[in-house]
Amino acid sequence: MENLPIRELLENKIPQFLHGKPEFEQCPKGTLQLNLTGEGGGTWAIEFDEGIKVASGATGSTDCTITMEASDFRKLIPSSQTAWARAFLDGRIDFSGDLEVAAEIGKTLHKYFESLRKMAREWSPDTYVHPPT
Image (cartoon, rainbow, N blue to C red; front, side):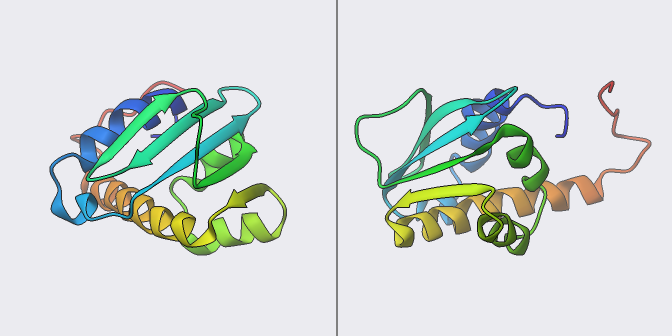
């Protein structure tokens, strides 16, 4: 996951994983704009409405916007909610918009990332080929 491009993660892996899973389709309705600055960054609109849709680029209306360095985002993906909260309090994450919608969307994405961490723990070194560094 560390070497997976952010674009691939956001536009393909997350929607594929969440599609058809009832626990994720009951997520809140809302749109999150994610602005990742620096190398490997970009802007994505993540829409939650009976599932998830991710589009590259800004959208006309969002419920909340998160702006942070792409390198911080990559480091925080496998981290706990506490690490995300610490990054916000340290000023590494800028937020604007509806905090309630952002919190619900965050819970949904946290479930996704927790599932990835669990899956990674279950892989044995014999069955998982690590990508080149």
